[in-house]
Image 1 (cartoon, helix red, strand yellow):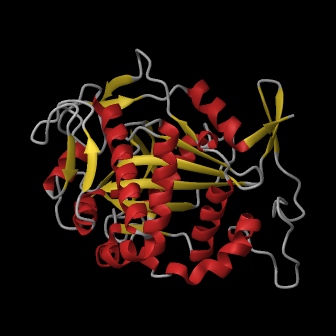
Image 2 (cartoon, rainbow, N blue to C red; image 1 turned 30 degrees about the vertical axis):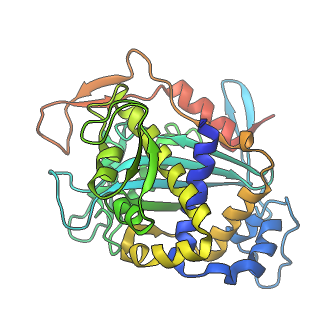
Length: 361
């Protein structure tokens, strides 16, 4: 199964699960028809006396699109892009594993170009070294003071998955600070979807298990080539194990995608109505959190539906170089004295973000 299929399945699962969690089912069919034709309208609202924009027309008001100069070249900001941060959270609401508590084990930037009907997923290594804001320990309010640490620490510093605090907001801010490349670019990251990885086993159980074929020997689960029906603690072992994998963290990311693909197949085979009935009790327990409203969720589905070929779904990762992994002291975690960080190549990051959010002139 290639990466394009896995990523499309991942997005499909997220949309299906969120809609199921919201309890909207087929009641959105009428809304879907309108938003499919003009998905941008769900993200930028026209004034009460303004006509809705035509399909493919950006809602940028009367302000000309921003232009910037990079290395002597002119770039114009693409006003038709939306950023949605996908978070996989290792947290169950009660267990504190170490001093950092809840962390985002999966970070994936979903970029929607609603005019050209393109979706790009950019995986951000959870150990990426970047600027992260501190937050008030009691309220989770994000502070101006920052530190250089792992990007997945942003979530817990602002309260993790406590909905009264700002864990997801701090993660979005950390990703925004990273991808704006030291202030050279302007890329809003205003939306997120988080999945509680601790309770994916509950979702699998509700569906009667999820089948995956092991790509390597997996301690306590099975051997390479075996097809396993994942249930209970096996789901957690499959999703979280990286130290015993051939390719470490990169293998774990692939296994997360494989699991989502298998989950998508199970939901598709079961049918949306039956799946919603089985999944709703689990989803009601904060397995899924998002700040997307229903119109925005349906608009995402509309963009996905307009894509003609699986090959048009783009999956991107950052290259691992010889010097990508470096050890540094960490201001959040004191033991061990130094942690392994993924150090992003600044030129590679800038190039990817220009391709996604700007148009060369």
